[in-house]
Length: 609
Image 1 (cartoon, rainbow, N blue to C red):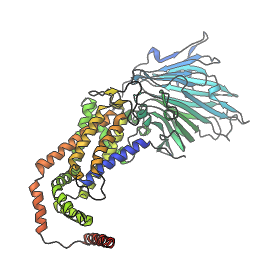
Image 2 (image 1 turned 90 degrees about the horizontal axis):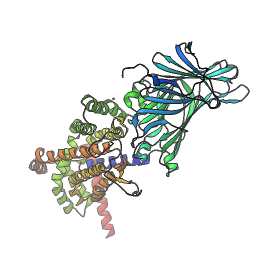
Image 3 (image 1 turned 180 degrees about the vertical axis):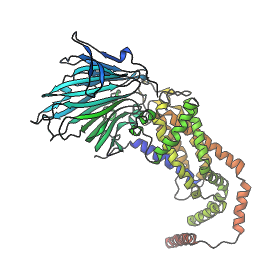
Image 4 (image 1 turned 135 degrees about the horizontal axis):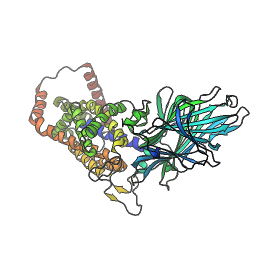
């Protein structure tokens, strides 16, 4: 299993944003009722005059009304369709050649195809006892269509040796999941047990949103293996993963997925992806190319594999309804981040948008307010510390001036004043850390929330993609920034600028030794946010903009209505007048270390003279 290549831009962005926030705190502190099948739900594209209809019984012992289609050398196209999904299946190779999602469109109003033309391949490889290879893609199958109640059934049969190979497709009304079964009959002594049958499944992922880079970031192979563990191939130019006891393989294409799952786990498999966007930057149609080689469990006898084939949206509620852990295909984040999204953020967002019917943009604003309110007791200490630091700034400036030639003494006095006023930067560090899981959870939630796809708000026509107020002409593009200007990231950057100015403005005038240049950080941080979020989901930028406004408002309220400046200063003066308490062992040890360091500095100065 080769090492994954991480999406370094996302990782870098999250790390830098986390660093910015932490530095600021530390320094200042979604069942539809089934309907009868329509006439379009079962048809044969071309039928010969010898076609007959009769009551038959298929291999699964289901009594069905059937229509038989004789094979042709080049194959025929069979249609299966319900209200959600339209499939075309070629009897040559029993291959799905088209999969159309009826209820969705791309960003430029085109139909959403998960399979189209020559972008999909599926082959079952069998090895005979004399060493020959039989590929299902080379076989021409007999087609027999039928109805099993309301379900459409397509049975494809091809001769193999003295027996036969059967592919059985069953489509339910109002369902994206296709029942898919592979059977062999009468070839138990024809197929070698030394080489397991192998499925080879290939597919290309299409671009369906404005930003290929953003869409490609969430396009990958995800799979479940070894009794419930899940993994993914990653975002490298070429990525490969291998696993055992595989129960499903998902070709996830951001908001749409093709998933092959099995009741009997595949013995082993190798999943590969190639990043077409990186390999060929000139093309603007495909994001990635997927391929999987899946070895079937086989120890002799006839083959029998019950599987499912899903062609539909990467929607958490739909995938979760199958009770096969398919919800893991939706990237809500790992560990605590995923739990926060699954059990807190998603239910709250669903309540606003579905239960209350609130517009999605407004729902993001309400969600932001709720998050800030829930976190406010945890963050209150941090906000309080930051406000006190603003009050103490003149006093700290006097200390800096008084001990400008003695860095150690200046640090000691600064720590003393902060401690006496209850404004130690470290006192706000833990509360700030407690909000980080929520921050990263939301960073994962907004770009992967299917409900946000093609939902508009104000000037943003799609909250799952970037908003555009200006498009650069003639293909002009700014490196790292893109070919457009997004307004929500600009607003988010402005808000973080004023937030940092509020909390660190005066610190720029008297930076402490060893601390970074705050003026540089105050301008760099908003600039970074502006560039990084220009190609991200506008819903995410909207969240950060509103969140920063709320934080600024809380800071102003605390500073002007909660904290009494005179009381804070009086507390410091009172602490100065009190007799010094005996220090604890830890405090005494720290003081001793600082005194020793100060003595060493003074000795070094004397030696230089």
